Every structure is written in structure tokens, then in C-alpha cells.
Image (cartoon, each protein chain N blue to C red):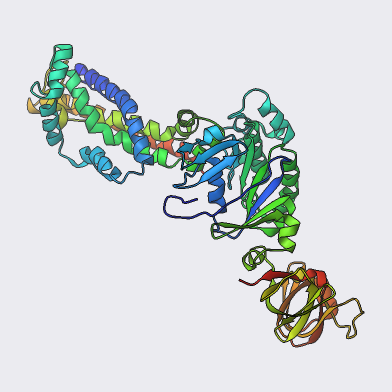
Length: 224
Length: 344
């Protein structure tokens, strides 16, 4: 089994999840509570990775972070390196690719917090930030956890985007799904079997845990 | 005040703050009572309007003044209490409190025994006490309550009504209570403002507003059953003689003139079979019973006395009189129970 690829996938998934928790939370808050007329456009853009072929997304990300794009040029000036075919490039692509898996559960969780509770907190003199920390976060915790778990699992399983943006460099961008592809291509069916089975098992356990925990969380905070 | 969406609230409302009284904001559903409360709390922002509390201007759209809810020190008790479901009773009460205030409130509202419970594990009446304690623990200058009894069942409502009056009177801050229930208004309020269709139509003591509604709309809102178009026929010795339908009524002369409405509370109408009245009964009307309906301990008797007249008597006395539709009966209305409203 290609432990190097598995390790890389886990690192990438962890980094993506952490970045998405930070970036996705304000975005989810905005999606849940904004009354702007063009909100649906932002929602559609965030959800785009759900329906777009990963190769299309990967292609655009590749172009966008390439050395001739402003983003890539800025990155090169700051770090001296290039984003495509690097871990950093993979991270950027993964964050975009898993965005809906963070934003949608979080927005749903924020949206289901009774607005009266926020107002009650404001009337008690607690700031908006304080209200978010002390009322919204605890009540939306199941949704926030779901967002993290789904983003993590989704990143572990990604293939097309990684291939387009990262290529296939052992230890740098060869993630577990590309490793399986390699094994199958080189007729190493035993290796492909083992790694695939591991992924299936991992995904199942993650989802089973999510659903069981989610239900318990619901029972705890069911409105009466 | 004009709100986003064009809803207009004509609420030139001035309330005395000095003796910390309980003001009831009374009116039918959809009158804008809750909106007015939310405007005071800062949860609703008008496009045009002004809110002044004491010497503080909380909102003045003309001068661009706006206080956030956090800056207003207005405690709010929501209709369904809005307790934080993930926090215990104790942590709900202590949510905003600095220092000892929360502990004092826990004690004053008899919540110490419930301290560790979650809101979903206590009764509606207890939830209400937690909501009040939580609001008061933040040491507000004004307390706002939105239909505080409406989410309780009937038995708890009666028990809590009496208790709430005591708690509000002891709170030491002026409070405004929104309700559409007249029993609640009478039980809770010192002062009362009647609101219909976004407008405050009358303010005054509860007794005064109920006994002397200033307009037909107020009379209707406070539930006066008999609002009768009448004409002033003549005036003698401080009394007005009215023509109502094909019958006559007398009332005290308050200097009214022109077309008027005679407002009579149904509970001020007495019924008797005794044909010859005693001499102090000025308004003695003979009529026919049209319909009788029992409403709990009371019976609502609809009469035709030359004009339609509704009487509210105890179900017991209706049974004693053995009332039947079609029977002739005398209705007695005290002169002082007839209140005149200028017809619009």
C-alpha cells in the first residue's frame, strides 16, 4: 500500500478542512442571514463544484494560479515558488472544490437557530460577535461538525482536480486516489484493491459516525 | 413612524416613567403592538420616526440617531420567552449579568431549585419566570413584555397572571406589556394604551379607558358589547334624554351634542321579571329575549328592546330566571353606566 500517498491525502484533507472552517464560517453566516437580492448568485457560485466536472474546475484553477496570472505572479514574488504542481496549489484547489461541503451544512445550521434567540441576546446587551460565540456556535455545533467531516472526507476522495492542478509527483501531489489510478494502470490489482477497500471503509465509517452523531445532537436541541 | 415596507405606525405615545408603572399596550391582533415593542427595543428600524426614552434619544431618523439594542438597556421578554436552549436556568439568568444581580434574581424568582435544569425540562410558567429574571438581571431601565401569558395553558395563565402583576410591580422599572386579552389587561395594568390598525387611539388609566372609551373604535377594541347610535332628544337637570332605536335612555349630561353613540358594557345590564320597577331605576326597558348562550360561568343574553341590547349575567341567574327565547323581560341599565361617544 502506498502509505506516502495516504499520508499526503490526510495532510491535504486536514489543511483544507481547517482553511474551510475559517473561510467558510463567515461566508455561511452571510448566506444564512443576508437579505441582499443577489445572494442567490453567491450561493450558486459556492455550489458550482457540486455539478462541475472536476477537470473543468481543475483547469480553471490551474490557469488562475499559473505564473502568468496575477495570483500566481504574486505568490511567486512572495515565496519564490510556483503554485501549480505543489502542495499549496493542491490546497487552493481543494478549498474551492470542497467549499459547498462546508458552507451548505453551516449555513443550514446557522439558519435554523431561532432568530429570537439572537435578538434576546442583543437585548441583554451582548454584542453581535459575543452572540455568535455564545448562542449561535453552540447551537450550530452539529452543523459545524458535519461541515468539517464532509469537507475532510470529500478532500480525501478527490481525483480530477488534483490530477489537473497537482499532477502526479510522489510525496508532493500524488494523493491516495491518484495512487489507486496508478496501481490499476500498472496492473497492480492487489494494491489497487487494498487501497480502494481502505477508502471505502474510511468513507463509510465517517458517514456512519456523522449520521449517528447528528441524530443525537438533534434530540438534544429539538425545539419544543 | 414609517417602517420598511411602508407599514405606518401612528403611535404618538407618551408614558409616565417616574412611578415605575405597568403599562398595557392593548389591541386586536395585527394592530402593530409587537412592532411598536420591537421599535422600542431597537430590533426594528423605522425609515422615518423617533423614539425618546427619558432624556435619551434612542432613534431619530431626521438627525441620524440610532441606538443598537445593546445600547438601550431595554429588557425584552419574548412571546415564547426565547430562553437559550443549550444553557441551564442559572446560566440563562446569568447570561448578561455583571456580579451579584443574577444570584439575586434566581432567589427573588424562586429559581434556585431549578438552577441546573435546561429550559425544555421546566414548565411554561417557570420558563416565564426565567425569562423575566434573565431580563432583570441585566439591570434594564425599561422592561418590554410581548404577550407574556399567551403561550401558557389556561390553568397556568390564571395562576401566572396574578403572580406576574406582583413581579412587575416589584421590578422597580417601568414595564410595557403587550396583550390582546382584556382580562389580562385589567389584571396587569396601571396604565393602558389602546392600539388599533397601527394607531394609538387612547391612553389612560385602565378603569378610565374601559369605562369611558373615547371613540367607537376603542369601545370595540376593549370589547364594549353595546355601541348604539343615539340622538339627544332633550336635556334636563344634568340628565340627557336619548332616543335609541324606538326606545329611550337617560344618561348623565357631559355636554355632548349632535349625533352620539351610547356605549354600554353588557355586564352593566341587569335583567328582571319584576314588571314594576323601583323608582331609582331610570333606564328600565321592556324587551324580548332573542338568544341565550352560555359562556363558562356567564350567560350572554341578546335582547330586543326597540334596539338590540346584549346583557351578560351569571349562568346561575339566567337559570333562576328560567330564560327562554321569545319571552318578554325588563332590562335595567344604571344611568351612570351609559357612556356617550361623539359619533364620527
